[in-house]
Amino acid sequence: MAIRTVIVDDEPLVRGSVRHLLKSHADIEVVGEAADGYAAIATIASTLPDLLFLDIKIPGLNGFDVLERISSHHVPVVVFVTAYDEYALRAFEVHALDYLLKPFTKARFEGVLEYARRQLRIVGELHGQQELIMALDARKNGVLAKDHHAAGQAQPVRRIAVGDNRGRVVLIDIEQVDWIEASQNYSTLHVGSHAYLLRSTLGALGQRLDPDRFVRIHRSTIVNIRRAQQIVPKGHSDYELVLKDGSVLKVSRNYRTQLFTGVPGGLGRDH
Image 1 (cartoon, one colour):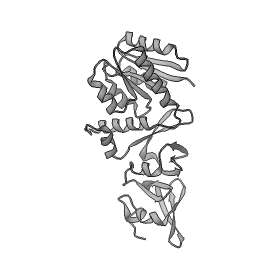
Image 2 (tube, one colour):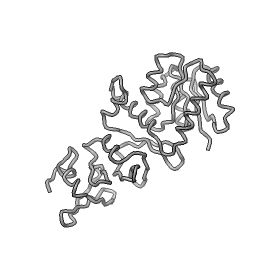
Image 3 (cartoon, rainbow, N blue to C red):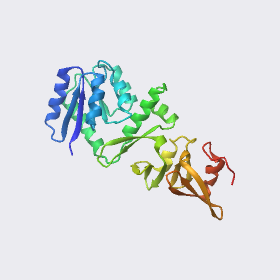
Image 4 (cartoon, rainbow, N blue to C red):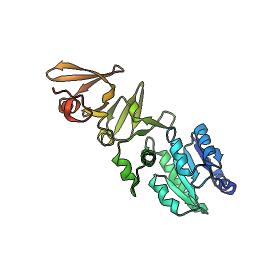
């Protein structure tokens, strides 16, 4: 499958140079170009690229603003392109894959492209996109810190990047998740009638969720407590949690206290 690529730069010569360098790679398909921030948003929204070469200093909206706008819908692998050294650090602070400092050499470009290929080959590995989303959310909410990774970790995750069955990145609003199921070293997010596999253990994911909303009720289950409809006693202090969509989840004795009184998101009952 071709790597769908968009080039955003206000300099026609730079766009032409990137396009020319990509032309010799049979696995790359340039699906769009843009010269300013607003056109970039429209192009990305209509083409849903896998890879984005994004100039930082462009008319209308800068590259960081473009990412903030598109991150509600789609997050490609991002390579920033800039003529200014001071932007390089910020590119890494928002977890871009890499950056190209103008004027860049063919060798440097080929190295970045191969790095992008390796990232895109890792099926289900969306760590980079997830970190980018968290950093953008932190920036949008006014969280300022030298370590943007720490700033993102300090706040509960609001959106999660997952892969769909077409190999594209889908952004899930965490409030839409009904429950989460452990699947060995992965976690399955249940969102209505859809299920998405995430490359993260349930324990690691649980540490990034809002404890006022998500409660662990079993070693293999975390539930969005606001989706709970009723608790059904099953005898011998066993319970089942029934969700609003009809899903029935087992409540483990070891995690029962967390459901009722042990965490801020608990149901406030002592059993």
